[in-house]
Image 1 (tube, one colour):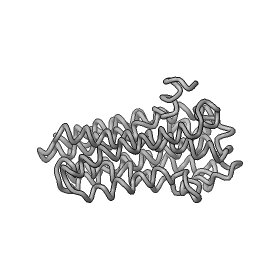
Image 2 (cartoon, one colour):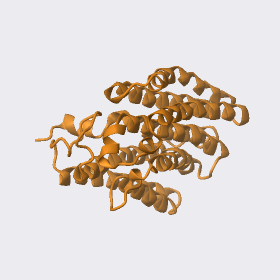
Image 3 (cartoon, rainbow, N blue to C red):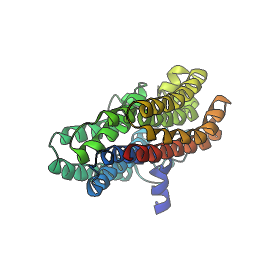
Image 4 (cartoon, rainbow, N blue to C red):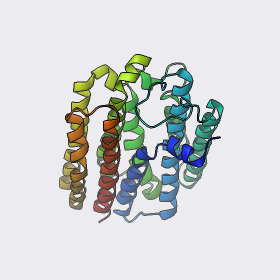
Length: 289
């Protein structure tokens, strides 16, 4: 029988900063124009977290039934390890999407019904990442989706549901969050590169190869801080507070460029998530001031 700890592990907690950080930043941008709304911010956070957990369960299910998780070096997957049945994991994913949809429906009713289209697109992107007949995650397009939905859409959307307008600073602030979300996916796929290549899962890491993927990871980290610096110079000087998060980025960059492989990349995955979370929290403060 699958225990609670197994379901928590299957939700992949190390990826959750990718859901929390953009909501913090979007809320900070709204607070900077005196439009902070705690209720709407919490609903946006619920949408983001439910989508992140939902896509993790959906990937577990889809990769498990395809057999591409048979030789994993990362955290155990529920279906592949036989810890839960495929229908149960699929139901968990759909339940998470339903929660995200319900919270999004409330936000749409409070603001604009156009949000329903955005929400539908986000759920579709989450499912078809590894689901369906032609999953785009198997065609080196995962990073594009992550940048759009856990960067631009999450930050700008969170700001919009509170301020009810699109702010330039929110658009710019969404870029480093999207870049760090991509970095999180890149290091995850770098860890699994050998197994993915054997199973036919053509992630961007598989397409680029080890060396170029490592430099891509470092480039995404560096570029995210460059954009934060530009934001501080252009819109909100106190956004420079987020540059302090660079201290947490040094260990994962060192590990990746130092040719860590397989399980040795797990700390880099954790530290990349923590970098994103700290950057998001500090950038939110900087935008709010």
